[in-house]
Length: 208
Length: 183
Image 1: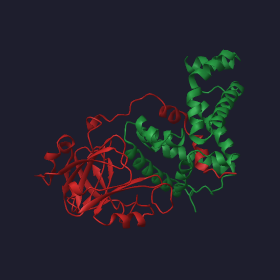
Image 2 (image 1 turned 135 degrees about the vertical axis):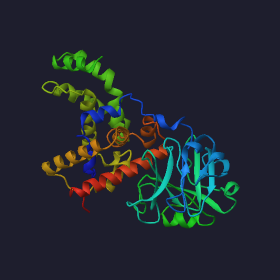
Image 3 (image 1 turned 180 degrees about the vertical axis):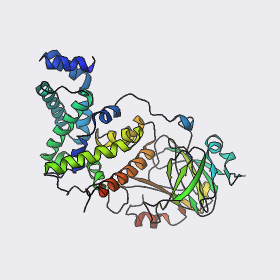
């Protein structure tokens, strides 16, 4: 007999309105972020005092600012292993970086704050914008914004064209393996070139 | 047809009520069942069992929210089927996702504990905003894929998986604080 998590059974007793609302036709689009295909926001910093003006970066990456100084991002489009088109913007900012994408576009200034839930190096910082939205952050020396056209990419990618051979992009899609912090969680990292395999191994994921 | 009218027909033992119920809810019920079961035949059987159960329970039941009522019956029927059909797990990883919040080994044979867990879950759900409620409910009540749930919430699959991971963490913390989580 299968062991069914008792929470699944408890879910059968959820509030009727919550259950019904989930399948209602109500539109949950966020009015604040502009067009849904418009990216991502991301930001970051040496410390929490560095901010990125998200409103500016949504439509025009060239107008990204860090500490009120204009920043020219690298921009590139490439395909992942499944043939999905992915656009990536990268800003040089020391120490940390973050990736986010459509649907979670930030509002106003974005700040980096410690994430008390994940004190380990993976996800030890989180990003919050003025609306209180949270964003995840990886370890890196760059601010990274990317727009995924179509499905999210799977696997590892060679990003030498826009990361100038210094970094490579790693995406981990966990599959319930206990070695992973998050089941079914997709994690994104831009890591120094040559470290992807090591990180994948560390995270219990086979490199593909 | 309006839910009230369907309920009225069922209450009066009018078989057209069953036909209307099937016309309006069969697809949704089947989707719930398919979320758990690999076999289409099993899912269809559970969906038909659900319709029959609704017919048998109304009356005396008179649900205020027919959507939730039929989906809850469908879920329970499907979980019962799953218990006896070890090979029929369609979405095993989905079932294990909530192990982060409460291990499957956790025993809730005690009805009081079950009720306490349900109460805590509802309290936690009510603390979420509407969008979070919808995402979590679509994924773990209706057993939709993260991609489908994301689409329904107008966010990307990546944003959905990220949000779901955070929600599971939040639920774990919530249950932990109430002494309902232990390894």
